[in-house]
Amino acid sequence: MSKSLIFAKRNLIEMVRDPLLYIFCAGFPIALCLMFQIILKYAGGHTPVFEVKSLIPGLMMFSYSLLMLMSSLLVSKDRTTAFVKRLFTSPMKTKDYLIGYFIPYILIGIVQSIICIILGYIFGATSGTGFVNFGRALLLILEMLPIMTINIMIGMIFGTILNDKSAPAFSSIFISSSGVLGGAWMPIDTMGDFEKFAQFLPFYPPVYLGRIITGANHTLPDNMGNPVIYTLGDNGWIHILVLSLYFVGVLALTLVFFNKKLKSDK
Image (tube, rainbow, N blue to C red; front, side, top):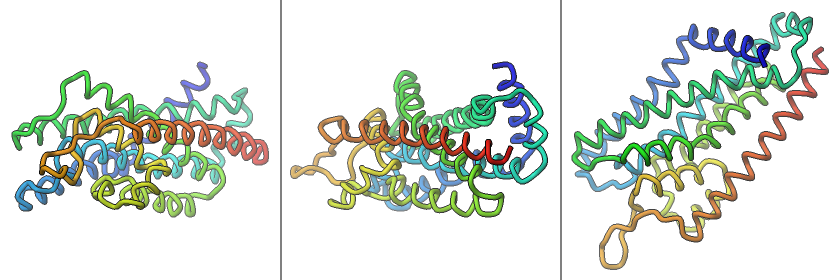
């Protein structure tokens, strides 16, 4: 375990030295949240998907896709340089490499979550709508851990099988998909069959479950014109199942690809 932590410390230092970390993982979510709050204000406050309780879960999910980009860059760069070859002379095993790459990004992901939660409190207070109590905020962070992990592991897979030029390109596809198919700022709950399709992808389930925690409203009211709050219901359990299956599947793929590629490179 000490070898993993030493390797993780090196990777964390490499990350904090990279200005892209602050641009993508901190600056970009803040800019997006500010932009959507401005849009909400000039839309007369009648765009539920941009309201804080609805927006923050989507923003958190999207921000984790940027971790995929960063992790794919670091792993692919290490593979295309002499760094990993030098590590092969050490007694590190595959699990040490995985843990060493994984820990720093989990820490950055938690920081991203805290930033998004703080934004929720700030914009919730300024708009007068409020956000959530501390317990629900903590539950929201915990609920987002699976999609955070999935993004990090997919980035590690891309970095393992692709070079440092191809890995970011493939990551960008997932980044774009997460924003559109995850309903981060699109009213997917009004799109009928498209919502049914999106719920079987890894992006929408964590946003849906997050909105249950924050008490967000659906885009469309009921027949009486009253807001309809997100609830667990039947669809909620489907989202939990889908997210769990993606988590297990991506974890298995990461172990297989990482172990196989490291052995072939070695």
